[in-house]
Amino acid sequence: MKSRVLRVKDYREVDVKSLLKPFVLDGEALEAELRRLTNPYIRWENGTTVSPGDQVVCRLASDCPRFQKEKVRFVAGSSMFHKDLEDMSIGMEVGETRETILPEGKVSLTLTGVMNRVVPEPRDEMVEKLGLEGVHTVAAYRTYLLEQQKAAAFQEDSYDALNHLMREVINGSEFVLNREDWAEAINRELDRCRKLCRQEGMVLEKMTPEQFKGRIPVKSYHELVAMLQYDGWDKLCRYLLGCRYAENDGFRVREAEYREFIADYVRSWHVSEENAREANPYDSFIFNEYAGHAYTVLKEYIRKFY
Amino acid sequence: MSIQNADKSNFKELISEDFVIADFYGTTCVPCKLFSKILEDIEAEIPFLNIVKLNTTENPEIAEEYGITAVPTIHFYKDGKLVDSHVGVMQPQAVKDVIAQYMYA
Image 1 (cartoon, one colour):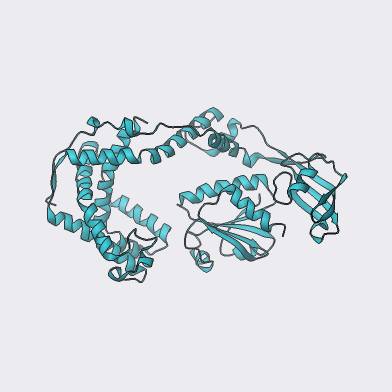
Image 2 (cartoon, rainbow over the protein chains, first blue to last red; image 1 turned 30 degrees about the horizontal axis):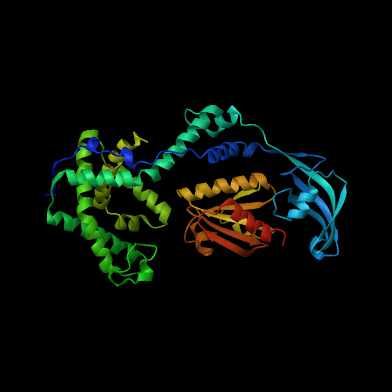
């Protein structure tokens, strides 16, 4: 490749703090995840009185066929069977009968059994069984969940800041960009799309807007070429930046990573290894990995401010 | 536990009776993992609900037979008949709405 980078703008000179949204904890989601810890330990015990969440077994009698049933099982308060009847069952004792008037007619409900839902408090041994490295207590699990939530929020909240930073670094750096390298990058991607389409029985150049829908965000082949040309310069810059960063931080992409990528692709897309390799040639993989590495480096920098 | 992992040898049998939720998922699919948690929550709430999970990565022939083109795909069966379906993650209340509509019908 004849293209090269002459000078790289130091990303630490760019202010990204103002572009980052502050992290806001979703306490409800955190508590829901903690409650999930106890799911496998919920017990159902034979009981005598119905409380919300309990399993109810009852006999229904009514002139309405829908409510003429010998054995019905529902969860009290779930509203999945019949809200009024479920509400009526709450507080009933086994053997007790209650009646209500519904729009469909009079319904009598006799409670024949109840299983009380017993939810234990989260315990350290429940956390231990999850097998998370370094996470052995409920307190540590809470911290772990918080970190997970923060990491997920960062993925979303860092998008604008990351694009801004990348733009600033590219604009502030000096590159020698060779037209042939640019054309090669575009043609490589076009060729990749062409092979993918052929594997699905289509001809890229003749694809209709319907065929593009859900596959590539364009409506025609010419739009696709224009999109790749437009992005080509920046992608070439990102590749060169990624290579430069890799020289400093030791990032390397080897054949083993490619083999792993192909194996994942085969599993995910249910294609043969031959088709996976055809759609993802080694040189495309390398180019994309180094271009992606530029993003990774900048993202790690932004993370410090989140 | 009412969540059962199916394969090509038993999938049809597992969806043939009563009301069944079939979750078609992929091994590396992140949204599938999210939906899996939602199903586990629902199972913890309604333990007598029949939930069948099928790994489409390991059972592509079943996925093809049932027209699964994306994961997660959720099928709702009543006595073996497909009564509702959804592609993508369903929120808990949406799943419960379908249960309410068909389980006691």
